[in-house]
Image (cartoon, rainbow, N blue to C red; front, top):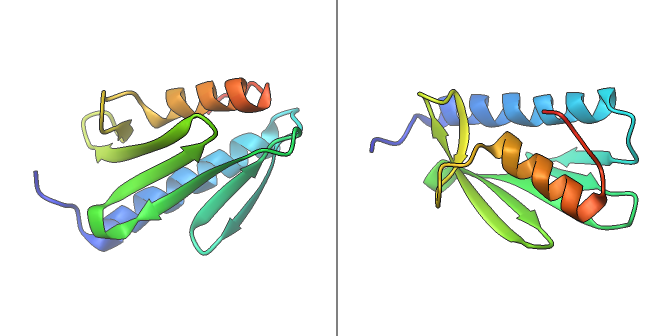
Length: 108
């Protein structure tokens, strides 16, 4: 598998982080977020956090939650990020983690 260019990778990451921010802004939840240096921290009403960040050397998006850390690769066929271990889409994994950890439903 050939790694995508750094500019293409950064475009996919930036678009994804903006989409997550927009979904949080549009939702009626207690979620808040902070984006600093390409690291998106989602703050839950219960004080916990989920962290989404770019891993440029390996061209992955990483998600850190209370239940563990997940690595995602860009899949052109799926037109999105998929978990490297089982192919689950980021949108599905993130929604599940937000529900489990924060008790919030978020449609991405």
